[in-house]
Length: 283
Image (cartoon, rainbow, N blue to C red; front, side, top):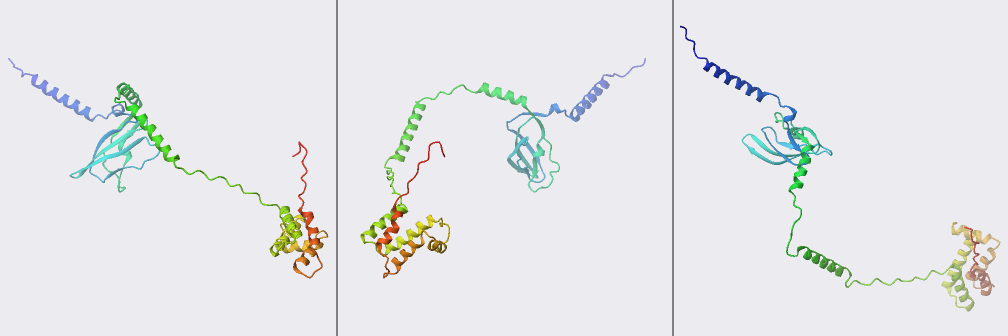
């Protein structure tokens, strides 16, 4: 009779081998996108990056970037550096942390491990709900805290107003400056002195200056040079004779021109012109 060897040992070895193959296949099988680390938007996360290459830094910040990254701490060990990297996802999508890192000296980061994650807005909504659930509705503060705070605030306001207004000098009274006399008024005053015989040399010089000014305005010569104005005044039929008499009286003491003649020339210019009111409805 033929005796067959037992087969249970063969079956056990085969089962162990099959389990090892399945385990290795699971470990080596590429991860799906659903297996990425999901992080809520707007909440800071942490990642530990170990790298033996050049010193790692964060790329310069750009407006509207999807992920904000900062290096919180760097620990150096034998041959490697350990980086405590913090990041915040700003919008939904899949991102790789190493895309936001660079070297301090600009050399390529060869061999820097990849760290992919996914910004998930659903988690953000759930996080907001958990925060609202754990918030306390109110805070009880004893010891008349708010009443004391209001009292101190009123005391501070009163002290500030006292500093601003107490002992403040009163503003000076406005000084009313009388309007400057018109040309007609100045000629009238000089005419009074001339008639009274009290017009001195300075008054005579001022009289000549004012009369020339009056004649320049009358002949529309205010923008012309003085030499041109005097030449025009000396040749004009209305002003040539009064100018000649004035110059003889001022600069030739032995002339036959009397002060009464000069007063007669000045008198027409000492009367204020009458302003004619415009009819209503006309501009």
